[in-house]
Amino acid sequence: MKNGQDRLTMRCLPIEDRPYEKMLIAGPQALTDAELMAVIIRSGSQKDTALALCQRLLMSENSQQGLAFLQERSLEEMMSFPGIGQVKAAQIKAAIELGSRAVCSVSRLRQTVLKSPQDAISLLEREMSQLSREELRIVLLDIRNRVIRVSRIAEGGLAAAVIHPRDLFREALRANAAAMILAHNHPSGNSTPSHDDLETTRRLVEAGDMMGVRVVDHIILAADGSTSLKQCGLI
Image 1: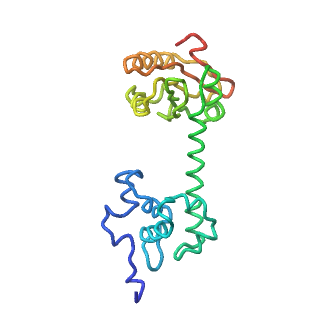
Image 2: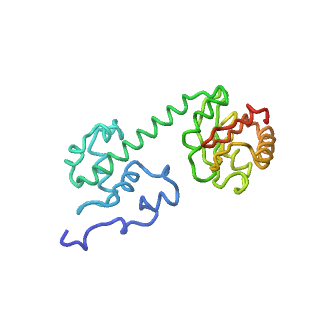
Image 3: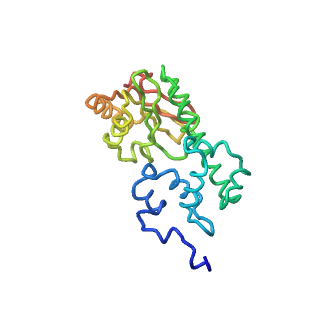
């Protein structure tokens, strides 16, 4: 390598082989471990592209370990690898830690069983009651009323947002959910259901019966308190 012009960069690769562009086109699930790491560190070294550097890093360890060694290695150990400086080591370790926390969060959520409307309120109230804009979310449940996940469906409230039943039930069917709980917030602080709230709930309950995914409750969350339509006998 005689000068900077001889340096191989990601722009030398076909667009379909560039990790960043590939992720935009096909989604993160289509990328290899090395390609995902290349998206995180963004740039390579004087000798390697970001992708080649990440491939070398992964090949330097026992292949049976997979990505586990990235969590086990300290920042100093990461920085000892040629081409991985302080910034790249910090980026990789931060991504690994974020992924670990996300997995733990999902695991804890999936162990949650909702036995009553108050359980659903407790799950959602702390965050949703303080939102400055209205949002509609759904809590997807399995046959034992365990939480599969909470999905944000729309922003703007039931009156302002166009809520299509297909959007809600597409999420439920993908998750193989047996039931769902609707939830939205009232930034005004008053959780009293409006006419639109009641009418939309009725329509979605009927759609759920047809789709085989029960709509078991609709929770309205607000700073001054929250309301369960099921508890009020409105569903």
